[in-house]
Length: 354
Ligand code: CP3
Image (tube, rainbow, N blue to C red; front, side):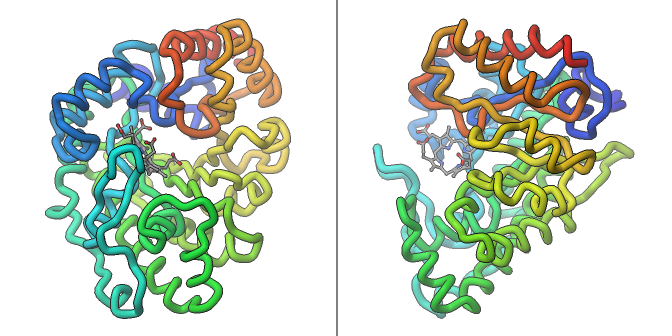
C-alpha cells in the first residue's frame, strides 16, 4: 500500500495486487485533442516551449486529470529530449513532426556522442517532474518515461520520422558495431535519465519502444530488447520504501511478449493487435499487462466504445494485474466527449471483474 497517494489503484494493478476496479490512463492523454492544451500551447509558442518550461509542462499534465477521473498522470515531455541533450538539435518543422539538425551519419558522429549531464542538460525535465508531483498532491501517481535506445536510435539516424527505417536498418546490417555503440551510449543515458526522474518524484516509469516492431525476430532481441533489459536492470527499484514499477511498451511486440515479460519489468504494454487474454495466458503471473484498446475506437459512438471496452475487460478476465489503456496514443482528432465515455465505461464495467 502506498500511503502517499490517495488513489493508488494504478500502482497496485502494476504490482498485481487487488483493486476495486481496473485503473486507466491514456497514452498521449495531454495533447491536441483537448482545446485547453491547444490554448496553453499557443501561449507557450510551440510544443518544445511547453516541454522546456516546468510551469507549462505542469499545467498541461494536469489538464486531462481535471476533465476525466483518470488513475495516473504522465509527465508531459517527449522521448526526443534525450537525443536533443546528446547534442543532435531537436526541432519541430510545422506539420512535419520531429527532426534533428545533426543526425548520426558517420563514425565520427558516433564517437562524438556522449552521455549528457542529466542534472544540467535535462534539468527542465526533472524540474517538471518535481513540480507536477507537488501539484498532484497525491491525487494519482505520476509516470515518468523515456524512449527505448532502439526507438531513439531510429530518430537519431533517420533524422526524423520514417516509413521504412531504411537508414537505421541499413546501418544495423552493414555496420552492427556502429549501431551497438549508439545503443550502448543511449542505454546508459536512458538509465541515468529514468533514475533522475525517479529521484525527482516519478512513481512508475515506462519505456516506449515504439519502433521495436519494425525489426526481425533476431534483430529485435539483439538491438532492442537487450538494451531495454539493461535499462530495466539498472533502474532504482524502491524509493522511500515504496516499489517503483516499470512498464515496457513495444508497438508491434505481441509476438515477443514472453521475452519482453522476462526482461525484469513489472508490466508489459500491448498495442491493440493482440488478444489481451491470450497475452495473459502467455505471461502467467510474471507481469501485469497494460492496454489495449484500438485508439480508433474513440472515433465511434459511446455505445460502441462501451462494447469494445467490455471486450478487452472480459478477455483479460477476473482479477488484478490489468491497467486499461489505448494500444497507442490518442489521436488529435478525438472528441473529448468520447474520451470521457471511455473512462466512465472502464470504471463502471470493470468492477465485476474484481
Ligand atoms: O502521453 C502523454 O500524454 C505524455 C506526453 C508524450 C508526448 N510524446 C507528447 C507529445 C509522450 C509519452 C510522448 C512519447 C513519444 N514521442 C513517443 C513514444 C510513444 C508513441 O507515440 O509511440 C514518440 C515516438 C514520440 C516522438 C514524437 N513526438 C512524434 C513522432 C511527434 C509528432 C507526432 C504528433 O503526434 O504530432 C511528437 C510530438 C508530440 N509529443 C506531441 C505531443 C502532445 C504533439 C505536439 C504538438 O502539440 O504539436
